[in-house]
Image (cartoon, rainbow, N blue to C red; front, side):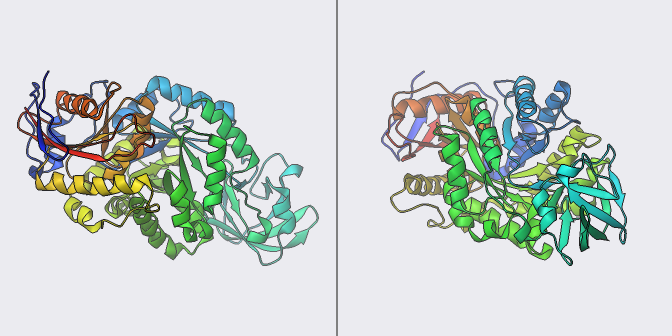
Amino acid sequence: MDADFGHAGAMETAPDVDVQPRPSVRQGVTRFASEAAGRLSVSGRPRHPQRRTRIVATIGPASDAPETLRALAAAGMDVARVTLAHGSVGEAIARVRALRSAAPEVGILADLPGPKIRTAPFAEGGVVLAAGAELKLVPGSTAHGSTAEEIAVAADEVVHALEEGDHVALGDGGVSLLVLGTVPGGVMARVRSGGRLQGRPGVTAPARSMQLTTPTADDLVRLEALVAEGIDLVAVSFVRSRADMERARAAAGPGGPMLVAKIETREGVDELDGILEVADGVMVARGDLGVRVPLEDVPHHQKHIIRAGVRFGRPVITATQMLESMINAPVPTRAEVTDVANAVLDGTSAVMLSAETAVGVDPVNVVATMARIVARTEEDFDYVAWGDSLGAQQVSGPASSPARITAAITGAAWRAAVEQDAAAIIACTRSGATARAISRYRPSMPVVATTPSPRTQRQLTVSWGIETLGVPEAESTDDVVWFAVKRVVEAGYARSGDVVVVLAGSPDAAVPVADTLRLVRVG
């Protein structure tokens, strides 16, 4: 197979490969997706090109079975979340291995619990607390479980520090208590707003009674085990400053997993830019955030965090209560559908399901429903206006940072792709950074990351709109571009006569950076 590769920036040609015709990009990515629906990737996993926003699904007792994991992947699960808040590290690693076996192309996000305080467990089925009822809060060391009359808090010092008039929130804040005063063995409290509690819900008390250190000593032990397992992504809870992420990064070591900062405190919001400078991704953790800031502020923080994540070229996950009613119901509420759609229109990279897929009655239906909502919303997404809104200076890092070069050249690539009606944008990448940088422009045409690293392929499953293809190692930039274009044509993203935009760098550069932009005409 021969090709004519000219100088960087020139229109180059690559030979034709027998593939099915592709409709014009200006006819929209949706039509291309519908014609490709059901077609398998070279590795056998169904593609979902019609849905650019990713779906993260939490794995739990309702979704543990191998056949369920496979069905979730087929329904649209791009990333599986394994939480370590419940159960041991060994149980979490067993879930990771089960996922690797059942759905090997799905990315895996391990979620560290952080310093979150929880109750002792309620009996199976949980309890319902009625507004006005009185109950006792006791130290967890004195009780083995929680009931409607007596709730044990796992951290004894929290109970000891509570005073009359304090407010305590349980779970995602739906259940709240007012402390009435101290009694022998604990404190009495009145239920201000009631609801159901089950499992081990979180406890949020006044700041003076809760000392937060992120990551905790237990988190670091868990992280060491996850790194040894080769986990793709790790979420760090209750991140309040860049120092928190730097501690996690030092523990993960070089070449470790992508680290996602969960923003769920006022301090995290205030220090967002500093956190994003050192994090690989960010999560809008609306559950705990909503009990630490006024509820009416949460939508505004969500939009701010998403835009900041895009500006820094970081994938953003929007989480908590997105389809909460589907824990028990076969269809979501209208408000939930609107919430998911608004997150997509905000520009989030991914939307996340928690209890809906971990303990819900029909996890596969939940993922399929989420996929339909996202796909329909993206039909009205204004891709060109979004890209136009990103100015050349909307990029993170100091002027000397290689990320600045990558950001500048990806901006040029987006504009060239629009002007040339390109069939696809190809990001040749080893770490995934080039693909994530072009992803922030939300191109209307397919973005295909070609990489020799299977782990990078899995890590890119959390990034907006990126399809991945494996390619062999290459010794020169020309070879990198050659193998990428050949692979993309073979996979059906382009055909003879199409123009593709290719981003690449030198494979032997000391510091990886995308510094080459080529326009290649196929055939």
